[in-house]
Length: 324
Ligand SMILES: *Cc1c(COP(=O)(O)O)cnc(C)c1O
Image (cartoon, rainbow, N blue to C red):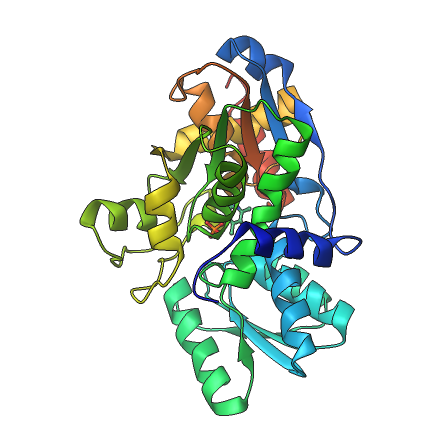
């Protein structure tokens, strides 16, 4: 497979049926009245592992298991590792997850609870990736990349199918963007069905590797720093094969939001939507609250990508932003 087709996405959907959630798409009255057009939230927070990553991991592992592989390894900012561990356990496959010391403890614990082998290496997602690739080479694990893998992208793309089935007249998609598996998959499927749709990627201002790479015209390294949107941390890989080109083709716009804005997104999700959203998942709401999303001609759909925030950190953010 050298590029993705819509048929791959429909096949992924069949594989995922019964294994991952078909998540709710709910209208937000407060964001709708703010934007002047209906605004819907696609709640990947409702997935069994608390993030959309279970879609891509499950699709990749279902394919890998058919070829008789019994051990898989990955590098992760937390959610992909948890998703892979979950999917591996369901298929009776052994999973190892390499993470950096930047990954929050709640996420490491969640991966461990699923029975995966945990390896903490270095201070960046790139360090964790080196470790995972070494294990693939030396210990015979099959490597499943967190985003730059067509099986993973096809799994995430099922979000685009679900959105358009529920809301055929959606006009604008707003999608959190890090390595670009979520964005390129969702936008690929949605634009494949509705080419006139507008797709906006949103990253955090601190260490937005895809944004910097697109500006440079090639994948470049960006220093990884702490951010409320920890699931958006890490590079896109200097040897990026798919998501750089796909994001370049599919993105109508990429927005960056700063830390106070992400905090406002988390607080809005909590107070107005009664939702626990992690920082990475709140960037779309944050961008809308900043009036950065021009209301087009029809409904806006914001992908709320995950719920896996440390609850003490969440409480602090809500307390410190009482008037947000
Ligand atoms: C991984 C992740 C993202 C970004 O996905 P990419 O495919 O790396 O762009 C966004 N939100 C959450 C909650 C994630 O776990």
